[in-house]
Image 1 (cartoon, rainbow, N blue to C red):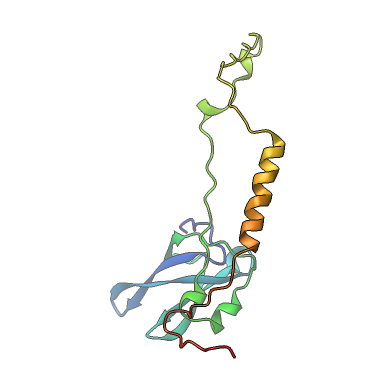
Image 2 (cartoon, rainbow, N blue to C red):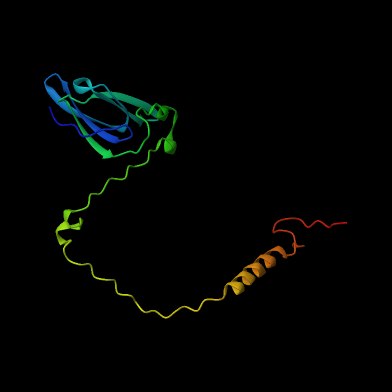
Length: 169
């Protein structure tokens, strides 16, 4: 029995299923979104949905079958265990957000606690030229002048482009 990857609802998966026809074997692929995961232990199954020629097709696959192999194309970020609401949706509304993978820090980036016996060096202060700021009163008056300028704009007597001019009587 092959180890199956961690499949969750919302994931885009590609399922390779082996089919025996007489003495010949062939492999078919079924790529779609995982709608739900059901069951426990050996009887655990997952449902995959895809749109084929404008028609929604769902198929149920067992986790523990040696006849299927599963490949995760994208991890989806959903808040429900069963995505049955996708059955009513079409096109872009059926799109699911992609989950952001968690990035683990390398061990060299983690803090080393064995270096605690050394005293910390004080930070060197940079001497910069002080920036001359306007007094607070000047800032307030400038802001109030701008507001008044906006309020005192006179309405235009000209019609908008493409509009007929109407004379007021």
